[in-house]
Image 1: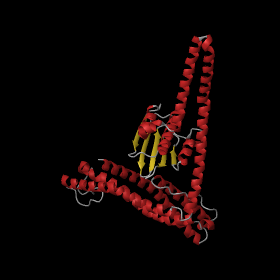
Image 2 (image 1 turned 120 degrees about the vertical axis):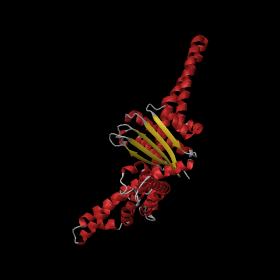
Image 3 (image 1 turned 180 degrees about the horizontal axis):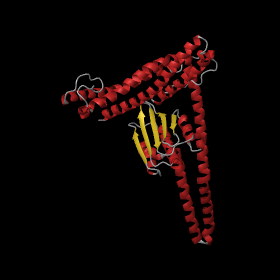
Image 4 (image 1 turned 45 degrees about the vertical axis):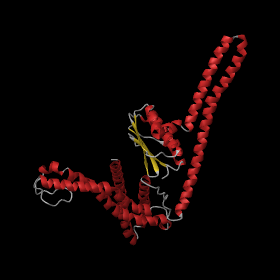
Length: 408
């Protein structure tokens, strides 16, 4: 059963990738025909003004495909904007690779998408054919590729048997279709040799700076928590103990009352100190693991929260801590800003990446610049070389996808 569930989930993911690839292939096909028209018009001198715009359109579609490929596998680095000037743009190595990719994905990716989507449709049509074949005339065409006359239940059951074959092909072949569809993009949209290294160095430099900033912000938060809370409580304990010592000889009853107040202040200081420690690395992660820790967050959330965790092997402590803090901050945002009636948290591990998805049915419109804590979440995620994708159209729903590297 475990193998069947994994294969079914893989086929559903593959179907989602194929649908996304169909979208970018349609865009690529449109840009391809536009560039052909611009090329023909340029031969007579009237298409040159639109040539640079067509390269920008090509870059826009290629960036969409890079983002799609990055979402479903190893990151494909962005190429940035097209260089100014047609001659300079045509010498750009990224443009050369994108021009090769365009017809491959526009035509080949489109055909693969159609076939990959047709297979599950054929499976549903053929498997359910015995339920509705009586509504058709015998001379009418049966679904999918059936070409013989359907005269009775036996023929209908044969069609259903073919539908089972389509279903097996969809489950086993879906991931293969998705990989073949993405092959051209992963090969041609990746940075050229040498450029890849320089882009990666720039990306790591920015990531390191973000990590240092996040570390400094965390240190300031801890310092404020200790200074404004725990330190003040300990000062109060010290003052009360001094007062109790002075009152011990003159008024023992008064001294006993002061000691009670000192004990209360010490307990409050200890509680605040535990809160600070939990903010650094929650002990619940060690005690109950990521699943138990997230269940605890969901239980304390003011909005009904459903948690689903599928992580067979525990990740590194830093990865689990990052995922925990991301979910904690996201649930806080949901309660404060979204107006949602429910929220779902899904965590699963796919190969060497941990995927954390937080979805709510609120009014949407989440903005990183509105002070809702989203910018802090992004800094924390990027500091760990992760990636955050936020989808929050006005009217909702809001979906936050966080991907964290967690080793193989």
